Length: 180
Image (cartoon, rainbow, N blue to C red):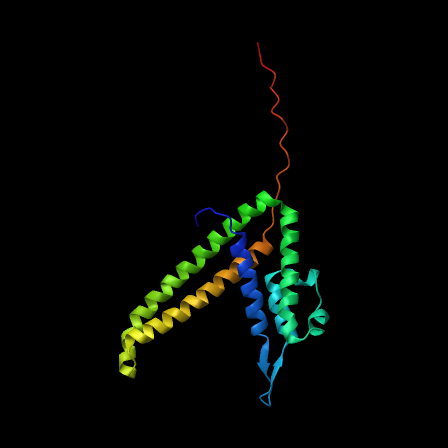
């Protein structure tokens, strides 16, 4: 927001997205045993960055669940470096600033609206024998964590999907013939 370099924030967001995607890969089967769903992780990360260009589902399935996060992080950073190389350092810094500002703006507005909804309904918690202050703190804390995760996901998705359109060079202005 202060116009500083946002690359570390974007890289932190990439790490958060990869970690949360791998954590969300665990599921329970019909018998109650936990198992890791490789396709779920692959699908979610493919929607965030161009994972298909760097790895196949078989690459992730060949890894143990504790190795997947490191592998996916390496692939994500490789894709990020390729994006920097594609658009150039100066342009990428502008894109990073714009993406972070847009993501913070969108998610913060939604966060403030949800805070208002929570505040309007918090007094009903007293009827349920719950301290409204404690319920408010718990719900707003959970909402803030959700907002932070959504901010990172939006920023990461936007940074990888950003495309630079270069305008063709305009011909030099040539003087027109003048009437004497």
